[in-house]
Structure formats: C-alpha cells, structure tokens
Amino acid sequence: MERLIIALFLLVASNALLAQGSSSGDHSYLEWGTPLVFKDFKSKPDLADTAAARISVRIQLGYYPGRDGVLKFKSVGMMEKNESWIKEQYKNEEILKHEQGHFDIAHIFAKKLEKNLKEKRFTAKDINNINAVYDNFLAMMNEVQVRYDEETRGGLNRGAQLRWRRFIEGELELVHP
Image 1 (cartoon, helix red, strand yellow):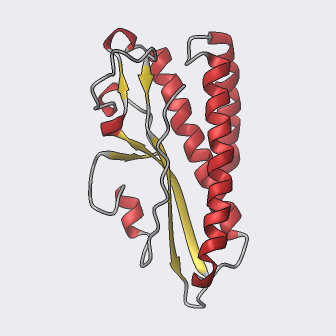
Image 2 (cartoon, rainbow, N blue to C red; image 1 turned 60 degrees about the horizontal axis):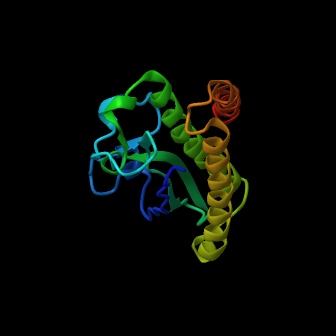
C-alpha cells in the first residue's frame, strides 16, 4: 500500500504563491499538470519495502477573501519529490503510469474539493466548516487511493490497471471540461 502524505495548506493573501508550487519557493513539490518522469522521484528507495515505488501526494488548498469578504478557493494535487521513489529494477513505463494514477487521483479530489467550496459562500469565520469539508474529501481520496492499489496490485495487474486508467481519465475530463 502506498504511503500518502496529505496536508492542508492555507493561503491568506493570494493564490499567486500556489501557482509557484509552494509558499517557500521550495522546488521539491511538483504541481499536477505535466506527466511524471523518473527524475521526479528523488528519494532513495527503501529496499526493505516490498513496494516497487512510493509516491507522496497532497492536496494543496489555497484561499483568500474577495472584496465582499467571501473566500475564493484554488486547490491542486501536489507531489513531494523528496519523499517519492522508484526502485531501480522497477523503472518501467507501467510502474510510472501507476504512480501517475496516484498523482491524478490526488488532483481529481483537489479539483472536486475546489468546486464544492466554490459552490458555497464561506467567509473567514467559516474555517472550521472549510476544514470539515477538506477532511471529508481527504477521507474519500484515501479510500480511492487504497482501492486503486489493492485492485491493481500496485500496478502489476495490467487488466485492473487499464480499467483504472480509463476511470481516472474519465474523472480528469469531468474536472477539466
């Protein structure tokens, strides 16, 4: 089972920082948008781990108040490069595509979260409600991530991997019409 690192990142002033990939200018995070490549996996593999690869993903949520005090939201899937690895003997396109699936799932739930929050009128006083919505989306995403790994056996079951790839591509089309 993949270890997922998921964190809530709140921006107060502007979503400009979100577009840079992280608030600190740290380039160890990769914002979803281009296909993963092997060099994105910068951590040293855990040779005692039975997994072929690990990807650390998170949902980054930013918000800032509009002129009317109603919060504006932006959310994206992020990969932590320095916590993600692929064992040398598994560096092949099938494993890379499987890990891309995890990254895509994180992004799908980030965009669904963003849409859900934008459909409501939240102000700065609603932080607890925003956190509850966020936690709910994290729980849903984690369930899907676990099911993805179990059904595909970490990407080794090609038939299941193909079915999941079609499902993920359909979900991506829904969040990016």
